[in-house]
Amino acid sequence: MPIFAYKALSASGGVQTGEVDAADRPEALRVLDRRGLQPVSLKESASGTVSAAKKKSKNEPGPKPAPRSAAARDNKAKEADNTPEGPLKIKRAEVIMFTEELSDMLGAGLQLEPALQSMENRQELGGLKEVASRIRQLVRDGMNFSTALKRVSPSFGPLYCSLAAAGEASGALDTILKRQAHYLKTLSELQARLILALIYPAFLVLAGIGVAVVFVTVLIPQLTKLIESTPGGKLPAPIKFMMMAADGVKAYWYVILILIVAAGLFFKAWKDNPDNRMTWDSFKLRAPMIGPVVASRFYVQFLETMANLAGNGLPLLRALELSRDATQNLALRGQLNVVIDQVGDGRAFSKALIRTGAFPPLLIDMVSVGEQTGKLDMSLRRAAERYDKELDKSLSRIMALIMPTILIIMASLIGTMAYLMITAIFQTIKNLQH
Image (cartoon, rainbow, N blue to C red; front, top):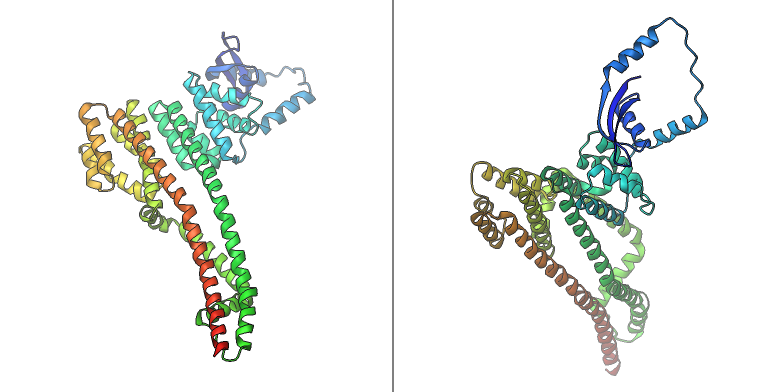
C-alpha cells in the first residue's frame, strides 16, 4: 500500500508532519480528516513504498495480520457511504441558505474548504450537511468549486455554477455568492408575492366559472324550454350558439381534455428542443409585458457580474466571456458574442455595445463614462442599481394590472350571459303581448 507524507494543521493550530498508509490520495485525505488534521501538503512517499515492497519480499515468516475488528469494518463502511454517489436535489430555500452561509464565512476570511467543513459540522443545516460534505471532498481532491456544485446537485442550476466559476476566476467568490443569494431571495419573494396577489383573482375566476356553468347547464336550458313552449317564441342566435357549445362540451369533454394535455406536452417538447431555443428566447424578449422584465433582469445580472469581475482586476475580455457563460438566454448570449468579437479586435467596450443595437442608450452612456474616468466597475455597479429599480417597477406594474384585468374579463363574461338571458326574456314577453 502506498505511503503518503503529509504536512497538516492540527485543531490547536500547530503544524504536524508524518506519514499515512492509504490506497490513494483521496483515501489519505479522508484519513487525515478523521484525525482532525487540515492538510497543507500531501505527497506520495516513494521510499515508503519501496521499503514496504522490500519487507514483503523477505522470506522470513512474519506474524499473520490480525483479523479486522468490527469497529474497523464499520469505519470502512461508513467511509464508503460518505463517497459521492449520485446527485442530490435540494429545495430553493436550502440553496439560498447554503449560499448565504458560505458567502458569510468566505467574507469573514475563511478559506473554501474550512468553510465547507464548518457547514458540514453544523447540526441545524439538515440535508445541506451532505451537500457540503460532498462538495468539500471534491474540492479537496482538486476539483473547481463550480464543477463540484454541478456534479453534486442539479438544484444549483447552470446560472449559479457559471457565476461561481466567474467568482473563482476573479477571486471574488464571496461577493458573487452574496449577490446570487440576494437574487435568489428576490426571486423567491417575487414568487411569494405573485402567489399572494393571485389568490383573490383565482377565487374570482373559480366563482366566474361556477356561475358560467350554472348559466349554461341550468338557467339557459330552462329559459330555452320556456321560450320554445311559448307561441311564436324564438331563441336569439347567441343563446343557440351557447347551447350548441355546451352540448358539444358535455358530449366530448374527454376529447377536449386530451387535446389540451397533448397541446401542453407538444409545446413543452418544442420549447425544450435545442433547435427551437433561440426562437423561444427571442420571443420572450419581444413578448409584451414579459419582454421588458426579461431584458431588465439580464441587464442587472450582466452589469453586476461585470462590475465584480472588472473590480477584481480581471481583463475585460475574460470578464465578458464569463458574463456570457452566465447568460442563459441564447439571443442575448449571441449579442454578447458580438461584443466579445468587437472587443477582441480592439474596439472600445461602449462602441461594441452600440454596434450590437441590443443595449439601451443609458447603459451605453454609463459604460462610456466609466471608460473615460477609469472607474468602469463603479459605473457598471451604478447602472446595475438603476436597472434593478426599473425591474422592481416593471414587476410592480405587472402585478398591479393582474387584478383589474381579471375583473374586466369576468365581468364581461358574466355580463354577456346575463344580457343574453334578459334579452331573450324580454323578447318572449313581447311575443306573448302580440
